[in-house]
Length: 420
Image (cartoon, rainbow, N blue to C red; front, top):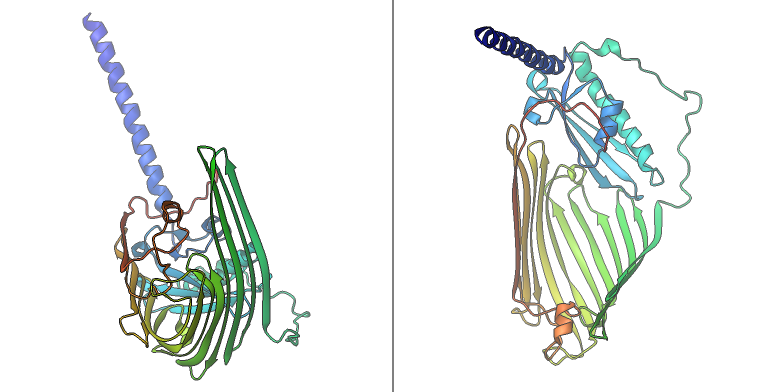
């Protein structure tokens, strides 16, 4: 019995030693996997990037999960160019030993480029931006630089469309079950011409949304239809000042419009140059004009049609930095025939990186509503209310959202594994 106890004890001791060796081995393996020699630690702030594709094509850097661990912070901003293409700005911010090494480069896609063609170009420009950091990190000797098509460089071609870009499109959706059907159709037509001195936008859209409910052998039909035409022309006065106008026309069953048309001259001042709009903006926009309405049903003010003058003032602020994004806007609308008919809208969203691995988001919006001149006289049916066939009376709206994200663990995120 005593010999058996010793054998069991010796067996457990050997098993414990083996387990300890395995734990140390795997711990060392993890440590070795995070020892990445002299490679750059890079953090990507890019909501439009296909990060699996980026990691596959640029596999000679370490991808950190937090900006505080990075040697280089890359922020990619995107905005729509005049011809309908995308303009990307790559902002490279050096950190730690590269704290004074910053750069910004730009790439404008072709409006006919596919997503695959665009993401390949993004890889090229990311590599170009990283070159100086590799040089300062004594890794430049690992690169070969070539220039292709040296004999086939084309001169700028004459634009036969004079910078006009047209888009025509439509889509449809249908869903059905035993007691419910939904049919939605949409059609759009747009024309744009954008130059440094002038921007022209013309848009037409048609939206139709039809619901059919079968309840107790009775069909209940709900339908909302909207047609709209908008035209906007903006002239650049300086790199901070613009003037222009808005022209609109259309109808809407939801807002009780058989026809609604408006014309508003406007002026806008940006405290920062418009060229920096993807990074920061502080704009003040003022407009004043005339709106004419023909109503489908008599309104609560006993109107079947009317023409009104109104004015609007809006202030918008946007900051997009390595520590986060903040968007804030305030706008006020006033009818000149009766100052009690007005509207005030306030909204703000923020996504802030508080500290290493911790980010906080918050957003809110609120409106004081005193401009519902189009409301139908009389009471709406239960079906119209539940199916949202008509706008309901209200004196306010508000919303609020918030969130907190805490990320911790390995500082690297290099591996691409698409399984499952």
